[in-house]
Every structure is written in structure tokens, then in C-alpha cells.
Image (cartoon, rainbow, N blue to C red; front, side):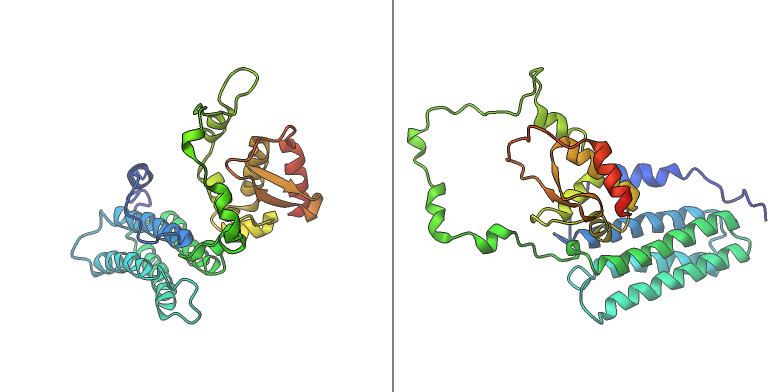
Length: 277
């Protein structure tokens, strides 16, 4: 068949799937499960778009669509089992992913879709399987979150946080202002993106991690991409670098911590990161 027959306007996938903010979050604090589901959602949308032109009477069209939809339900069912050793649900997802790869290849060999689109789609489906495996080792794959304060704070010291609000006269909010009179904290936050949010999430509990350790927890991003975002986060004062060169570690700066007088330049962070990679 003509290899251009299945070429369609695919920007509808990202435009529709990604533009909406969904308030229903069944995965809770299991961030990796949520990311896996978003990936699967995009893949299922792509499969349906790619098979739109196929005759509805063709069995392979129905089968590949049904199997892709089942994958969504399977991922929803592993909210509390992503880290479970020997989980049959996780194995079922891996089997579904391999099955989908075979079905897409059959579509290409049968002439229903182009080999180019089939290659791209099978690579993306296979990446989902790799992402699932990496997610099982991530600290973001759990629905329970501890912080150091939860386990180390002395209960006897909690009285220090209790104040008589009747004696507080100055209610003005002190903002982080730069020399030009602009709100630096708001200015910094306005430049945050999803990758930065992911890095800060990994470092949220005061962990001191290297670039490779952060990359393990964010398998959807390359180490080079994480290096660039870390450089910006250090410059913005949201992350602090500890150590030098390949022994460098990064720790998240508390939201209410005062801004450091001197921040390391992005070039220094990038240089040390490249030596680590």
C-alpha cells in the first residue's frame, strides 16, 4: 500500500491529551505510576488514530484497539503493586506490552500502516516497558511518603512553634526582592517546568543525590537533560550542589530558606555533570 496512506495530523494527540489538567489522581503519591499511565494513554490514542483508516471489519483493527485499551486498565490496577516483588499484575502489563508490539508489526507487514509509523510506535511501546521496569526501583513509585522531620523531630520541641497570635503586630509578608524591586521568588517559579518539578520531587525529602541517581528516578528523561535542568535549578537557588566533579551531590533547598548570597554558575554545574556522565 502507499506508505503515506496512514500519515495523519498527529498533533491532535499531544494537543488534546496534554493540554488538560486532570483533577482525579488515583495514583496518589505514586508519581511513577501516574507517569506510566500518561505514557500509555498517549500510546493508546496513537494506536486508535493510526488505525482509523482500516476497515472496521478487519479483525486486526479490533484486536489491537482492544489490547491497547486493556493496557490502560492494567496500569490503573498497580497503584500499590508497582514495587511488589513477583506481582502478577506487573507481569501481565509486561506481557501486554510485548503483545502490542507484535500486533503493530503485524499491521505493518499486512500493509495496513507504514513501516515508518510502525517503527516509531513499537519503539515507544517498548520504551513504556523499560520505563515500567525502571519505575519499580524508583523512590517515587510508592504511595507513602516520609520526611526527615516526620521521624526525627523531638515532640518536646513542638511547643516552640506555638505562639500567641495576639502579640503579633506586624502582619506584612516579607518577599524575596531583588535590587530592581521585583519579586525574585515568583520570578523563579515562573520559569519552572515539568522536568524541574520532577527533579525537585526526587529531592523532596532532603536526599543528597548525584546526577545518575536522579536519572534512575526519572527514566523518561536523559542524563543530559537532567544536567541542564540541574544547572538552572542551582542558578535559581532551588537546589544546592555539594562536592566537586564526579562526587558532586545535589540537595533541594527548602522553600522558606533564605536565598544564598552567591549561587554557583550554570557552567560549573554543567561541567561537573558532564564529567560525571
